[in-house]
Image 1 (tube, rainbow, N blue to C red):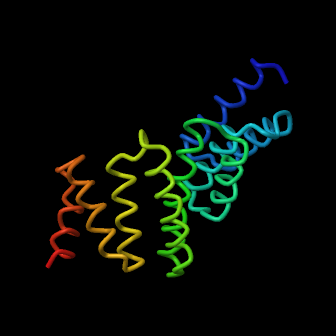
Image 2: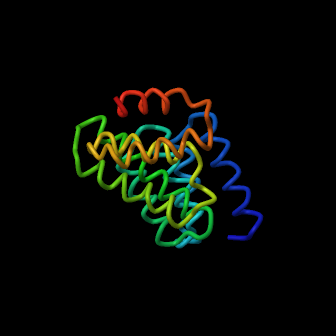
Length: 164
């Protein structure tokens, strides 16, 4: 596969995904992987595609492949999105193991990829702490969230509830 063919397939897959044709987008990504089986960026795109259509377990599988083969930003995004996926699965079946896995991935972003530890990631981490009943860490994290973005009303609401 030439570089131009690679770029064309990737652009087609992204466009198809944007228009909601997840199955055809996944076919294009799979075609790329047949030529480049260790392309972490493509695994990340596949994972986001599965996430967008609610197939969280498939998304998790591909975010883990992103961790294995990816680099740079893709690794940080994969950790953050693994947290989101595990919390989404927890909402479906209330499994504490999912919450613990989410916390692990959010903490990894916070601790190792500081440039990605924005208010959204920290807020998601705080919610995971609340779900796990780790309230003291939730309060600390929510205070960090409102320091970064004081306009996040949900963070203030949680703080008000937890501090009283």
